[in-house]
Image 1 (tube, rainbow, N blue to C red):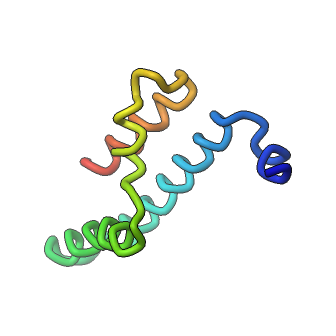
Image 2 (image 1 turned 90 degrees about the vertical axis):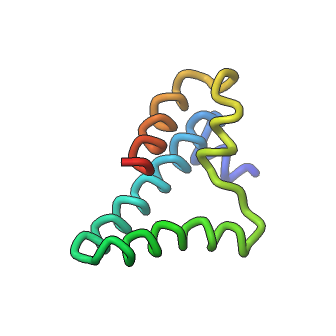
Image 3 (image 1 turned 180 degrees about the vertical axis):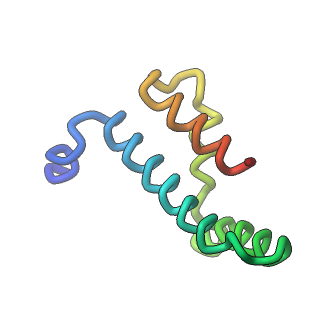
Length: 88
């Protein structure tokens, strides 16, 4: 854990980094699907959740959204941004 604290002194720093990583990955996915037909775009989007399900992982937005009122403000805006990008 010492190396995590070196790179992310506060939990909010780690939280923002994780959210930003997901935003970047989703942006890359959108870019790679830009010229695909709508069905292929939907399949690519749903593959995100299938990947998580297959590995017994939870949806980041769902996990954090349920705690939204107790999150510190530093995480609220990045989380809202990620959620908006996912439904845009």
